[in-house]
Image (cartoon, rainbow, N blue to C red):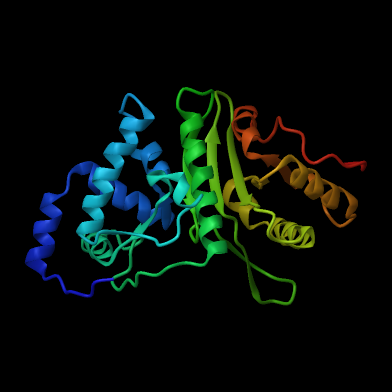
Length: 283
């Protein structure tokens, strides 16, 4: 990657050359850390008549931002070379970080930013989290629910005092507030890629129960959000449901397990109307 320095005047010239959509794309990439070309299309090029037209427009825009060192494209592609130009993965570049920081958007980019190639596991999970946020936004357009707020990491993390007195944290991938005509619903989302053993899911659920017992969220909201695990396949969903229902320490009323295809239905029905993971136990 080039290390040529860019002075303040040149930075201002770059900023003035950007269209509003260019700036919006940079902010979206910064918020999600990494996005594929196709995801960027779905965020910002929905005004095009066809997916092909959207992809062409996105590619032209992204090449421009890459040449200005505002964004960088990773060496790794999602789906491989045969997946085409839509498989490119984009991250924030040093110039993009400086532009955001100087525009007083320090939450999206620090003053000092280092471009890096993430691990495969981290990248896949980051893109999966972005996909959930994107699908929530897409599903809310014209649907029977609205998205009020989406908190991403680390803003969605919650701290609480453990039984030993130390500070512990739950780290959901997303915290979401949605609304239907009659209710406002709060959710913690955990995106599972089947890369961890089911025992890790159980331990995470126990941590959520510890946080539930702390009462922090209830004092703040008056309720505790539904914790939703999004599994990559129906078989993985069944495995998680089984492990949770078999563990007597798990209160399954706090948890939902779905696949991505069930996300829109869950949001439309709301947390109060959706049955939790089945378990033969009394309330």
